[in-house]
Length: 393
Image 1 (cartoon, rainbow, N blue to C red):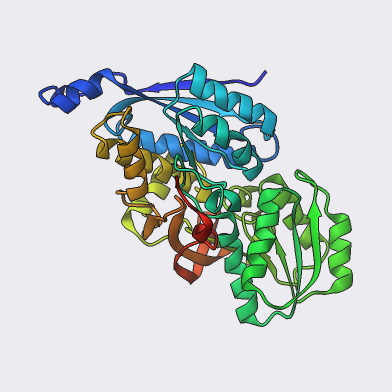
Image 2 (image 1 turned 90 degrees about the horizontal axis):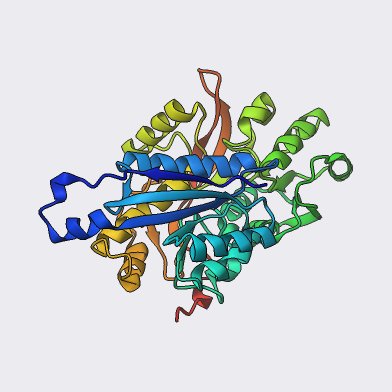
């Protein structure tokens, strides 16, 4: 049976605020947040980073979001859409969640969007950002703290185009985010695609695909293989002796996979909206606190979840702590009145971020740990290509 863990945080009201009407109301109110993340199987490390990033933010804010005592219920979606949909209903209808934060994977986002938002809660995605919800299916109660799925992949498409790679081989898992990934790459890349493969989600043996790459000898390979898929692909890529063919990727060599990939990933490129060496004081403090508490380098999953907590905190404060004032909270979420760990950040009209994107490169630090580091900025204040199709009700 799936374990559901509830963490009650900050149950005592702050006596220093007792004199104000707002504090009296806030002291009696409790904010309920459901975290729905993938916490089992090969992709569990992604969900664990998001969970830990969110909980670190709550801790940093004294156990309260928006000044309210906060109860966080963490649920494993098991990477199964039907299971996730049922658990989402339970979070909202049974547990009374005001916000659901999640998921990691796009097929789960599609499954839970309706039960969460139609159930009366706000859904904040700290990672998945499908094209449909960025465009024609946008939802006034769905907000994204990460990106639109295509955008990170567009970074590598632009890089491949700028580098003059004429022939590129593409590979991604066969689900919505995989399709968005390759569509995003091709949006920025105008050269020849010599191969385009969609593998089963969760595949761990890439010997057949690597044989095709070796036979085709493309100028570069571009792939999106998160979690355990990425760990195995990178190791097998090196073992196959293909490292002379540039390896470009997104969510394949990052802080969730590098502890297992180690030297096999060094020098490989990725795309991101942030990296652990981001040069601002708030980000530096976050990285140091995360490493101290959890013993690992945070990746974008952790950063985006931390910012999701900040979004909720700012929105509730903007609504004066009134959880029943949905319009005010919605307005506060859209305003995003907080300092993002990534620096420049705002929410667009479709409730997806407008932000900068970077080419990052895997490096081994002096302390022996691995991380991605910013090579150069590729896009500035970049809005996604689907916002024009969004017509909020």
